[in-house]
Length: 291
Image (cartoon, rainbow, N blue to C red; front, side, top):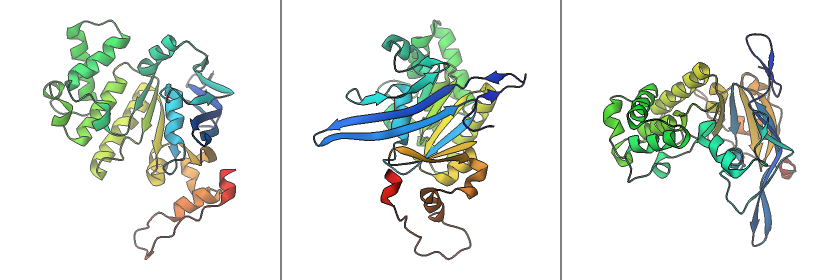
């Protein structure tokens, strides 16, 4: 898939990107002045898996929240272009933005413990999401929710439907979050570190679910993570962020050809099986990377 260009579908015609971002900036006022968390981020997304990787504080999560319209109200968001399906997300009415959010663009947050309502059953929460965007009967809603729970590989979905969030494991809670975000059939899914709180085997299960959903439903996926190795093995393209801006963009298969010293530094910090590297090298940050 061509990086940054419109995708070409099976009929040979060119498709406009699902998402177009040009010079996105997110600024927060503080007592000592403004702090810019996202500085001039630009990319396009088609029906593909795009990884955004960087350390904590690099601006990757704030980029996803700005796309979703979930940035804190006191923040200032500007962009030359922030369009979904050709529609300007920044200038559209709030009511239309709310309709798109959850229906056409959905976001899986990092930890289900803080995202699920502890006093509502799992089934009721997902039904509420569905009924917010579609007119369905109670019986139809329950049937669709159970089918979606089964689609994300939850065993005995009928039983889980009636459970409360504290009654399920972390891995199952993350599957529930995925089901909730997908119940309305969005075209774009933003996953903000969806596997960081999970053990390795459950991580692989969640990634397999996301991979199948993207390929079978023709969705676009933005996968936000601090794990460069994970992103490179799962995504089609990788954006590397540092200090609020994109310092390098490349196909995941070309990660070994990275040229920016920050990307090379991250790669050099990864442990290698069979090699004696103790202690692991520490990233030597340069002031010019932030410019």
